[in-house]
Image (cartoon, rainbow, N blue to C red; front, side, top):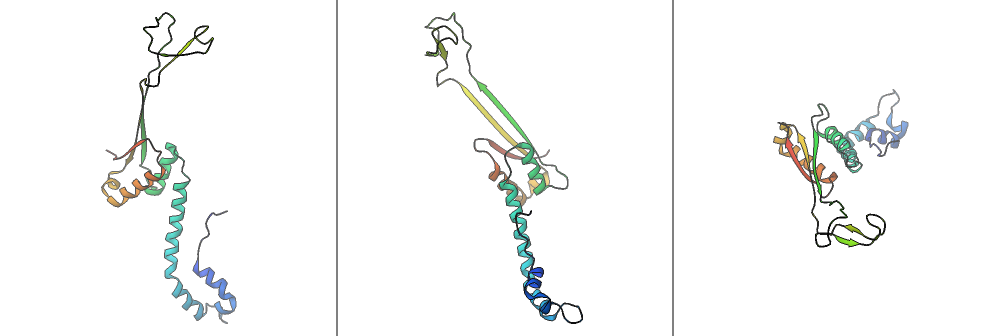
Amino acid sequence: MKLFKDINYGLMLFDALRNYFSVNSSGNLSILYRYLLSCLYPLQDQFDNFGLWRVEKKLIAGCAYQIGQFTNLLNYLYDSALNRIYIDQASNYILYAPTFDDGLLEADMTFAPTFDGGIVNADMTYATTFDDFFFFFTIVTIWIPATYYADAQILSQITATVEQIKIDGLDYQIKQIP
């Protein structure tokens, strides 16, 4: 079942006029039907463009951020013939997590003691403090063909699509394929 209804003025007019006013006695389209269709037909192009816009917005709204799905969507919308758009994601993840050593002296420990019996010692465990070093950095690079990168209109459309789908907190950059 289609999500959106197609608007076709020719069929709507035929449905409104029925056979009595749409077809003449020789079996051809009547002059009234042809006249009304010529008046309404310039609107058909606008509704066709509106239908394409609705489908595009539905695809963008339904795209979950997964690199494969995001890549397929960008290729479908902007480069459906050659599928040259691809995405790289580079992540650096550094977490300072010290090892537990029962032989350390209390003065040498830089941990905040928490009491939870039986995990490390029989009476005390050590957890890191809140100001320990934690670093997470991700850059998502979207590679597009040089012809799209040079065209300001296509580049702004791709940027608008990426802005609608992207996850906050990740850095995005759009580069041209070398």
